[in-house]
Image (tube, chains in turn blue, red, orange, yellow):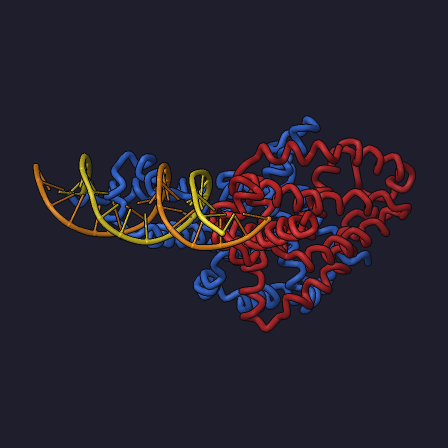
Length: 205
Length: 205
DNA sequence: GTCTATAGAAGGATAGAC
DNA sequence: GTCTATCCTTCTATAGAC
């Protein structure tokens, strides 16, 4: 019956992911998760003992998925401009498929900042930046990118990609009123964002 | 005793703001709010009847404050570039004083999208954009701003300003590890953001 | 208007049968 | 492994004295 166990555990996990992402840790109810999984509340505790453990399992799985999306894109053998285009394409596409993840992650990290340390351990951002700098030493001279501005640049890129999803409620509310399609906006954003950033970085020469 | 009443009500309101912003609607506890206000739990209900009503009062006050910050900046008699600089300066400064508001608002709007409609009614975004377009009809020709790209541009500007605060937990976690000061980063961001956007918009000509 | 005491509901967790 | 029944804590909300 190991196969069946795994299936139940997985069903619970998926249901928990659904509910936690939707309601957050505080708003989620064990009964709700049980209902989604089509099983009894007691079974949740059999597999995961406490709500806290269940939440942590879900959180770490999601966080891992998100952050592992970053590194590969930057490893590719591409020019800076290609990397920027590639990143926005991949990242926004991923978020289109998982639009509620950003707000969930931002929230729960904010509510429990110690979580972040564990995550960062997996990705050495400092080394990542160094590697990037090495790869493009010559190329970089043609752009307005200095050592000190890298934090500004990196967070700006992340902002442009992630924020529309975190603020979806507000943005969609405004767009609806103006007859603008949010889906179309997201589709167009992949290219707009890339060109916007590239234009901002290029030296006028 | 009307003066004393007002004071108590205000103390409750301030305490509620503090706790709700920190913990969110679901995570907040009436007992916690009462403690912060230095009064008894029963008094909360005397003044606001339910947790829900208290929360709504707090939410609408905060949302009003935030959105009313936008319009005046855009009304000023300034060039486009000056407006961009002015906006980032004012907006980031406001968020420096209220760093936890963005995540609170994003969250609660997401959890209850109907809230947004009431807010938008106060600010007719469509008209705002039109007014802006009128004001700068001639000036606009020197920039890469088209009618269709305005949603992209507006959300990009908002992203760059707001996201660092919404993602403060993550960003600060990374910065700490790299010996970067988050406060200094924010201070520098006011200028960096403005120049970044202006550069992206200017026609190479 | 403010307090103490408590009702009443909800939610996390466990015991115990199958 | 899965279920029913139930315990126990927590939390919102109210009753009633002052």
